[in-house]
Length: 188
Ligand code: ADP
Image 1 (cartoon, rainbow, N blue to C red):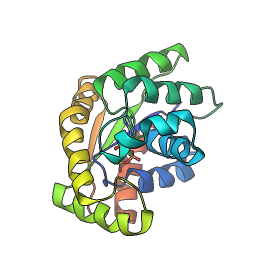
Image 2: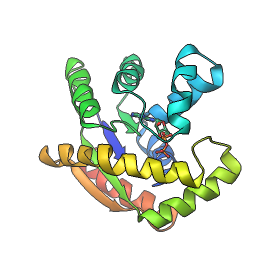
Image 3: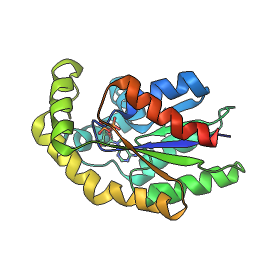
Image 4: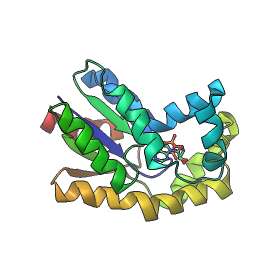
């Protein structure tokens, strides 16, 4: 299997690049952000529970997101692309264990690097159309702070396993897709 973690701060372009990878490599896309937004849209108990946390730009508990991912790993797939997960070292460890149970593992992490001011500009712009409760400047800055303190150590976690590949996340969507594919072709 080809199992990829697409990594990067909020606004780095993970969703956009995931779409390209799914089309090219035939992987199943697992985005915890999308799953949580679906829960909120459906008005489920879980959705109600996470609404305030997401609107405040904080991370949802490890327990909740790990359970969401665990439910989806049964899919009969050539591989998975994890987008927005794992976001803490505890999530990364849980993912390694879940994949080991399926006799597979993460092949590599692709980390999109984008300067902070560019992230804020992109997300404020997205917020005008997306209507997302967390795409306003105050919450965007809070999400970036959460990322720097809790999520960045996840890159180190994969670096220790020799799986980290950093990519310049500024440029045209096409150019960045080319850089991502360049890395993935080494593992496919
Ligand atoms: P972005 O990467 O632009 O912040 P996401 O859609 O990935 O957007 O996530 C939106 C919000 O959903 C996060 O700010 C967080 O509150 C919650 N969330 C998504 N994935 C996770 C996760 N793996 N762990 C904890 N919280 C998460």
